[in-house]
Length: 264
Image 1 (cartoon, helix red, strand yellow):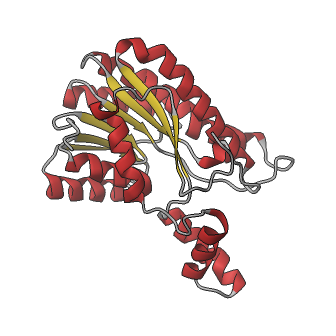
Image 2: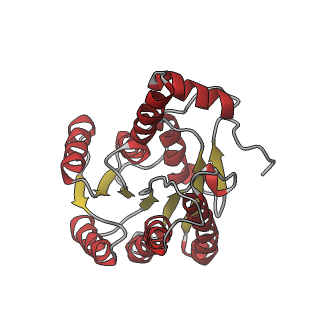
C-alpha cells in the first residue's frame, strides 16, 4: 500500500530509542524527513546518522528536554528554519514511574505531569502553526494501556497517561476543522530497552533470567502470550500518520495483544 507519505516531515520526541526510534525508522522507510529530539545527544546523533544512511532522508537531530518550555520553542524554530513547516508530530517522550500515592512528593508528580502532559501541550502549540503552513497534518500521542487499565506500582504514570488521552480528544475536536487529525495510541507490552532494564533487576532478585521474567509477564497479562516488538507498534503509528487513515480523528487505539480486559 502506498501511504502517500514521501516528502513529508515528521517530528518525533523521544526519537532515539524504543518505540520512538522504531517509528522514526518506519517513517523514513516511507520517505519521510525527520526531526528527532531526545536528551541523550550521543545516542540521538547515532540514531539520526543510522537512519540517514539506511533511507537517504533528511534527519535533523536536536538534543531537547521536552519538560523545558524554552527547549521546545528552540526546537520549533529549528524545524521551521530547516524544513519550513511540518506534517506529523509524534509526542512519544516518556517513561515509567514507581511510587505510592501517599509517599510521592509534589515534585515527582510535577515532573511526570510536565513530561507526559505539558510536553504534548507545548509541542502541539509550537508545531500546529507549522502544520497550518502545509494545509494540515497529523498528531499522534503515545499514551499507554495504563491510561485505562492501571498498574498498581505506578499511579503517577497511570494518571498522567490518562490525562494525555483526554488532552488528545480535546485537541482533536479543536483542530479537525483545520485538516489536522489528532489520535492516541495506547500500547500494551512492548519490548523496549526499559523493559530489559527492569527485567534484569527484578529477575536477579528472583534467581531467574531476564528472558524468563519477561516471558512470565507476557503470559500472565497478554492473551497473545508475548511482548510486541517496537517495530510492530511503529507500523500502526505510520498508518495513523498517513492519508490512508483520513477518517481516524479523536480516537484512542489499543495495540496490546488482547491485554485490555474491558470492551472499549
